[in-house]
Length: 171
Image (cartoon, rainbow, N blue to C red; front, side):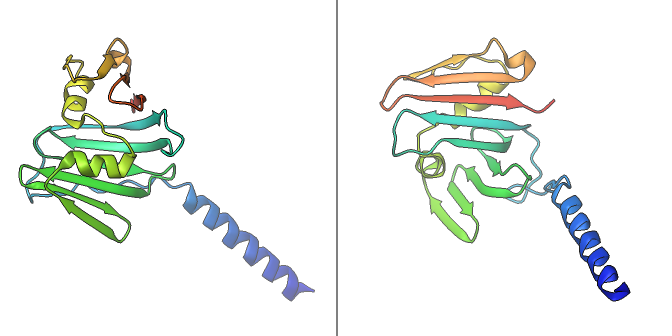
């Protein structure tokens, strides 16, 4: 009976350790950007939700890290445990999307953003909007009144389908 009891205690302890490890804060280490240079540009992190009014497009709800600038940067999407779902890096020479073991390259950032999210997003404008600076993007309306509190909402009216992007920054 003592042998069975020890085994049960060992299993319970292993389960508890596994559970605690799952609650650990998984942070990505600071690393050089896609071009090998340290990013001296802005950095934001938080949660983003993209809802597209099209039944064939799944909503995107993920943590995110956005670094760099409109010309060269990185967007990382994270699951609730902080694990990387996808990484999108871009520079003047093109863009790279990494999803698990799948790697796609394109001369167009917009093409890979659409592939990643299911909808076009104005990545260049995000850098301005997150700093509270209005930037006109055809078809998009942005509400910057909450940026001081780490909130941003943007609506795309056209081209169809309509879409809503919500961002909540970490504080």
